[in-house]
Image: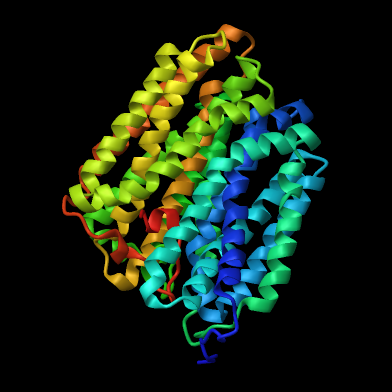
Length: 485
């Protein structure tokens, strides 16, 4: 085993380490919400490309990120977190440049795939570096602060993205990452130290990554292109059968590989299984709602991108405010109670959208109440789902369990956006667009309700959230899900 002493020199300013690692997480989190806001501008810039094709700008990122997240963390453990952090940072920044310069939609999608690979390397390694710089007594506190940076990115993404796009066009939603990446690289080279690398560990299953990516891509392709191909066409059947066959091969490989993409043994835990099922179903509605709301505001209410971005901002702000107290409520009353309570608020907000929002803009009376209700539900639900997923695992499995939960979220998001394309279609009138969006909100509410049914299977007993903080040496997912306090 090649080993480096994992010691933080006394002259290193830990605040700078936090700044660098949190900056990487901020980039990856910010890019998700910015791209949603940029979607109407992309439709305007590429009028000859279908909405199904443009949706790959979002789903492609999610597929690659989901497929590589666990493997990215294990690679960091094997060859060194510092090395993988800089690789991820460079790949993400390169992908951002490619997206910003893209002359066509296919090039833009390739750039997003590159971004997804970079983010999958960046997030787990950045958290590992951060935890190594602080003592175990501050671990829970520092991860919560790091998670807060991700929440800040989500909260500011719509308004910041709308401002950038309004000022310079959709390309600046990606170009903004270039100076941020440069700052993180130049600062990180001076303060981040090398960590213990276990080169004797088996290689992660990169073939498994290819299999799961291919399976998900075939599934998304079949769903999103179903309306144009025809739901009984040979191409659709081939796509869905291909997804099932390749997906089955992936599961067989996971059962036999020493470092699988997905450790199937963790699903022997009932709470882990149902929490990830609930996350998957919830994400299928949640991500569809995020994009659908922006499209509604710009196409039905004819809001500018800036106004639409500002209009959806109160929801993420509520999420950021509520996420911390949600963890404390889960400690006191149990994961299941808080999750189902949050889902109730979320479903209520979605039904408010579907039943009250009309064709004419009435923001304060129609939109804002639904946004606040759904934001409250999201803040109570997502962090606690993540913590509930890992709470029943052995402490050594907390981090990889959190990564699996984040993977479930990204897979659900990719499927949800593909279903959005089917539900919204290409409306040719204001009434058709309004009706389609109402159907979308009802679909999102249904997914949230099904998530609540799955959440019943999560253990009733509350586990202190501080106990599920990922260890330094393990793979980690999004800490917003790993630590909800």
